[in-house]
Image (cartoon, rainbow, N blue to C red):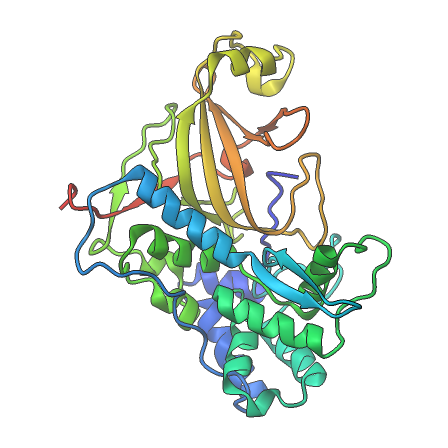
Length: 369
């Protein structure tokens, strides 16, 4: 369900974060030591057309580049059969120290565990540097599309695809279940750093987020980004290409990152159709309320559950979702217009049930310079 903090980390990682350390670098060193140097360097950014200078802002061009990256993330996998089948799948969610089951009873996911599982399934991993690096990056939640496809397809070819049964009867569900079982995927920072670079069409200084597991917050610098000031009680100022940082309401939790794909005002006729005065999102406002719609890309937390969950069909991993803001009562919600009967789910605290004091970072453009 939207709003539940689905990117929980174990206490040791939370303390490292609060103390100003980079938990990804700490865990990377631990993984390398524990596996005798098996873990290779993490990936570079996904390839992108690089401009030597900031480009003028162009909403359609920015959205086209975000679409291109999103489609690149939806990798193709060959499923063996009579005949073979090809399925396109968005990557699963994975984060160092993330939950391993819905109740949080299982051991937290880590790259050490991922590399051990992949090594057992692929005995030749140590002799294949590209595959080893791909597995390491996907286990850290920071893989490029090419790396995610490489390690997942290798495991499929090795016979590790779960059989069609229970909740995973389709080919796409079986691929996602394989990624979940092995701890392969992307966290929000891993997706956002790559998508932001792609949407800007130039280097934003974020390569280390995926290559070394650097902190995205520490990688966003005034050289490449402007901070967009926000006004409490007003719609969030954001446009296509912006990067948003949310702070979790629970101290020590990981928070969330998203890329902005679009920011529009909801059509008045749609507002009137959706308006229900007894629901919390609409309380105190009329059927002609001003509602802002934010369309966002990210890798979304899975809450320890690999499959679809929640009233709006939330699925962990790469996805495009919508938040809504009611300017009449300063309330946030989640809106899924992909369903037959769309509704708005109220977020009690703020966007995605995170704190309302959002941080918006805008890649510098020629106008801003």
